[in-house]
Length: 285
Image (cartoon, rainbow, N blue to C red):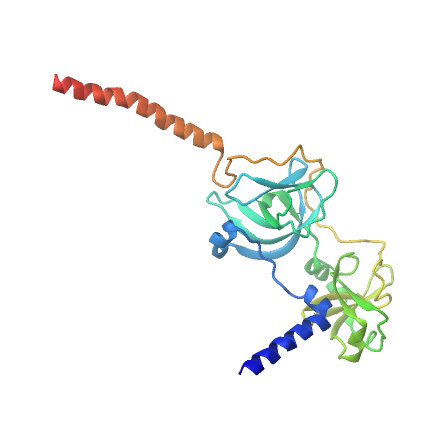
């Protein structure tokens, strides 16, 4: 029995070493970590989508959690960030878990060191044009795939893009894949530049579009570029100053409200104590 388990373990390790490009971009689901997520994961809804930062101030402040006022990042508007899941607070505000580990920080932005993720209100993000939007827009232009890439010999690796013109790589097919089965290509699409593209629906965890006419060009550009959604986008502004560590609880209300409540209790106590003790003293006399 032990030999069987050992053989299985060796097999999986070997597969990981032989096919590193597959494991790197397979359909893994990103999840945040931390005390908040561990306590509220059942209330979180996975979305696993990229969004644009779009704060009214010109930048987005990311907190340690929806129940913490500790700032962990300040990101300029117009930056693509990955949001794994969302959570509703008691006031009905929707918060998104932001992946900061893979975020590329620019000058003027601040991300606290050794921070893996953070949370920010979803009202501070704008939707990004995605493959589903591309498909809906160009569906009538898709034709049947006729084997255009079946005999192609890979020199280094075939590049798989999110959608034609996206300029975003999804995954790659390395050279040694020629010795195995060919992916199932589903459509053929010709863009406005005359480039032909074909779609891989699902292949060992990979999916996306391959440029038939230039399948290995990592610097492939199109005249039209990534698609855009029609929505209000606030101007970009450099975040103001360093990250703050405050007692403010962004999901449960402001610190001011808490202090007012505490002050009211203290005031009532100060007023009632003399009255109560005065009555007791009067009775004794």
